[in-house]
Image (tube, rainbow, N blue to C red; front, side, top):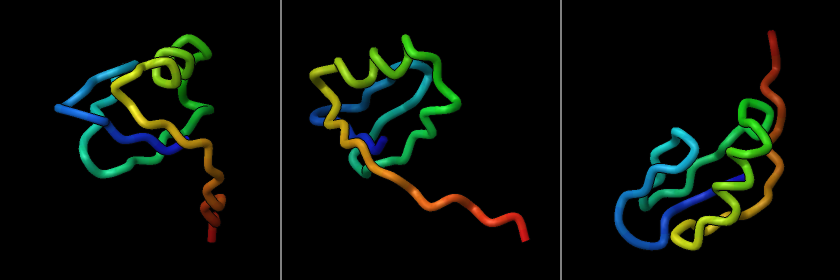
Length: 56
């Protein structure tokens, strides 16, 4: 999921959201944290897929 704030600085589920979009690893969050982020009207949330990092 990728998120950014609509207005002002915002903390939700222990993560600080700012003007620039950030990627959030859903596997590192609880279901409750994901729900809190997705339901926050001050955040713009997009479901996206990031490529896996290679272990070379």
